[in-house]
Image 1: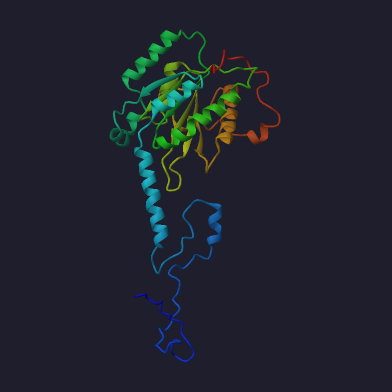
Image 2: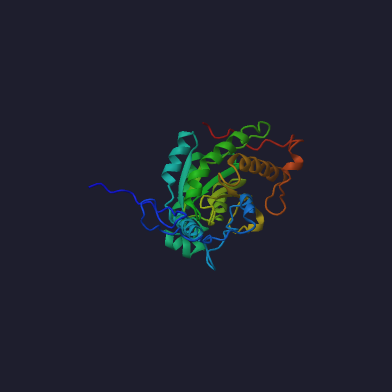
Length: 303
């Protein structure tokens, strides 16, 4: 026996066409979510603004979105650093690498003891000394680049190799004052200051650290870049320059490479970094930099 659909449409006479009683239409219900009057400003920021409200509470969609972002941030902090994969990718591009470790033996120690993440392990210091002895470096390196997982290995996995490629292209354009570069060092469980010890051990004039930044609730993939001139253990934050929020939704790799190249050239010309080194690229961009600077090294990475 087939089942006929029930027509619940109201009729003026109070009954359906077949004479059965009609079902009254539901009364109009108010919207469950009250939108914020300034929601148009959301297009200018990834910050959680103008979320609206459901009664006195956060709307369900906004609450679930927050929980997802929090989970992504936690995952970024605990994601293992794929140093082997990054090293293989760099070496395929013709860039030599060094695998190093901080004094923090595991992730829990790293998170609980920030001081250990700032120093190299004893075997890593020995590995750097062995490299210097084997390479017989007669002319000091002009620049050492260090990759460290920091608080987001995801950020380094996604952004470090493209940034190095873009920086390499710009450094190769400095034909009047070529850069002699050390092998790329990959430090597991590393913090920003560990780069100073790497640079000091390699005898480099400058060190650049590419490191995963503390994840925000909209940016688990944000990478920071830190520059120190004359790196040595014990430098303060005031002696470093920082370029932050390098990621597809933030500062692009190309823009970050431009800023870093500018700061490196200025650091070499002035012999300093930190608060005394200002980003005046908008002013200096049109007139060029250090046209008569002395030559400070030999060939760049071969690739």
